[in-house]
Length: 388
Image (tube, rainbow, N blue to C red):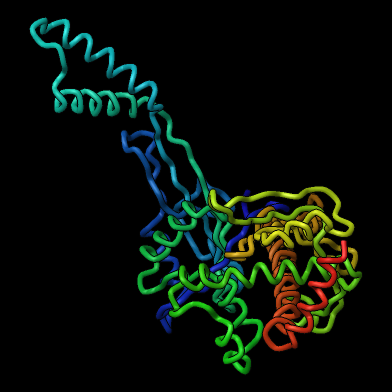
């Protein structure tokens, strides 16, 4: 689903590198145009990758800044068209061709490997020109004030592709995952960096290592929030910058789904608990058995509005992230371009509000986990876990 859908999966990155000091938007325009999508409908090419308009995936000309910029936001989509020939079809046709070839050469019992490979290549090339390319798109929104890019996918394969294309397009820039430690550094501030460093279990700044060695953050966050949700302490205050006022009240809680992971002699095993969880008794038993919560559905409520997300704790990937529905008043006199802009800004407001609430919740957790008396807090939680 695209960024304008009410429910979308999102992963966030920070942009790093040297940007042009002058003519930044002209440079972005040039980069997008040079790396725009080229259709392959009338060619035998197996695939094509390039940038298109977020508003219209059929528009890849980027005629002016209005096609990719609205105030501080840059927005565009990565489109990939790909032709695929079913392997089973190729296999059957190659077998038929081999039979025909051998029938013309009765002294031979087997088709040489090289000849069989040539048959396969010729058959694939012939079929490829008859297959229509299948399109796929992934949206990117780049907030140039925060230098955070939101991508509408949490698939590792898609994210790898987007990272590569972004770096190729904007030479000198790259996307770095906004993972739990990186996000913690942002919400806690430089004054608490040393306290966070003391808990960081990674031996270097390598992103994959930072994620792998700090899974404890997601485990402890879910444990802390589950305890708070079950003990009627679900009210928090906005503490991070964003659309909502600092100090505003909001509620956050876990309720109806958790995914747990444990390990035994047969390796790692995952299990899910779904449905209303009033006291989380089943999850508490699993935690007592040594499992950890790796994913959960989180709810946020503020001013009669609700946000919902399925959070992956190791990466902080926001799956099935649903926001309040965009509501824009329109009439027959409204210009379509102005209407699209209004819908876009309202959508960004709601998305960024939901993420602001998450970051504020995360800051509250870190205040307990990193800066507070966590051993005493953990003792309270352990007592609750065992009181089933």
